[in-house]
Amino acid sequence: MGLLFLAGYLRERGIQVNVLDFFNGQVHKEGEYHWQGSREEEIAAEIRHNMSPVVGISSMFSVHCHGVHRVAAVIKKTLP
Image (spheres, rainbow, N blue to C red):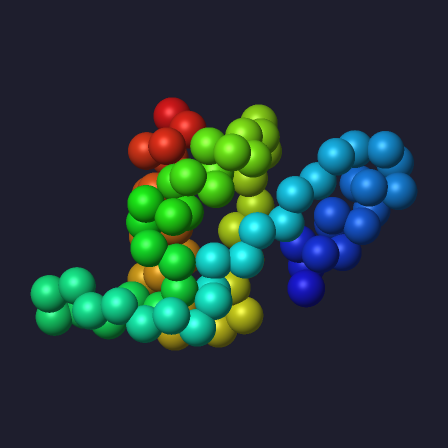
């Protein structure tokens, strides 16, 4: 919700904002780990398509911290 409030604030001031949701219910197994949401290549493609000088990441639950770190790593690799 925090990112959506921030996006609304920025949009009211004429700043273009894209909100992307990578938690889409898909479950993938990679080795011993189960990944829920978009695959890394899908995340990278969306980030390249919506290139922005600023990226915000949010998670509602601390149990998702591994996924948040993984998304951050994909973004850093895609937009160094």
